[in-house]
Length: 321
Image (cartoon, rainbow, N blue to C red; front, top):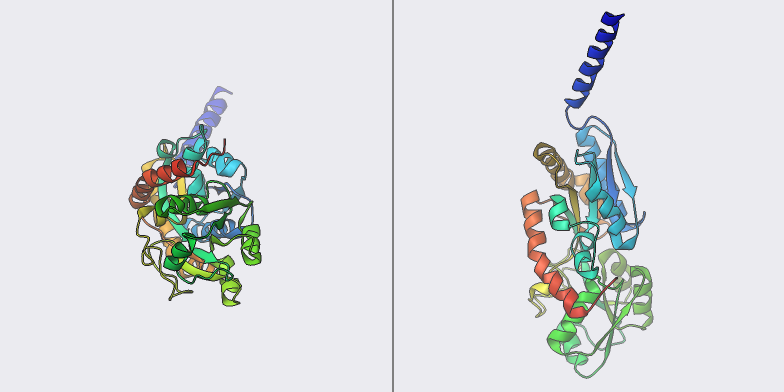
């Protein structure tokens, strides 16, 4: 009896040891996306999960956990077991702007996460209703000296809100911010003339610009877009300040205590997946630009944007508490 019990104990211990030493990954992985299903971000997460799953040999399940401007899902990602079986893919706002928009967060973005890569960036276009007599950024600035400009954004603290507030201060313009609950209603009011200008995504703007219902003045970021090769960047249009360079990016992170070898495996796999033809074709249709940089560069970009976004939030007076 004793020998049988001892044998069973040893067998169980051996099984546990074998399982503990199994190469990563040996079971399904959860990818948290802290926003609702549907839309460009959710599509990006699922496209990346599909490509990474092929390379890792395990299913990757996208878990939508929306709420509180991304805080609920991002907090879940920070508190997850640091074993590589829970990863977070999120908009930059939840790990960058939120710490300036909220007095308290249940996570510290700079300390609680290790960066894996920046997945892609959203192409944001400065767009105007054709009823105002401007076709370029200099013309908009000149027109704004004599007219009040109503500008829209998809929410308080968003890129469009903060950039507009900075532009008003920089050029001493009378810009009135109108916040919407999402991009779709904002663009509808832009088409209808209730607002004069707004930043909006390529995927949303393109059909209306091609149909003459909207006019594209400039592109946020550091390069022109293939879909609008004649449209200058904001820097080319006379706004070279760093506050105009950030775009909406998607980041992949894991809890900071995740072992280095697992982080390296995820980084290698994510970057190969982002570079794949299948992934790039999928996100190109959404107007997204692939990045797939190193973990070191992703962290460096976060740190460079930190003071810029902090200044923008403080200048705008935006708060979500």
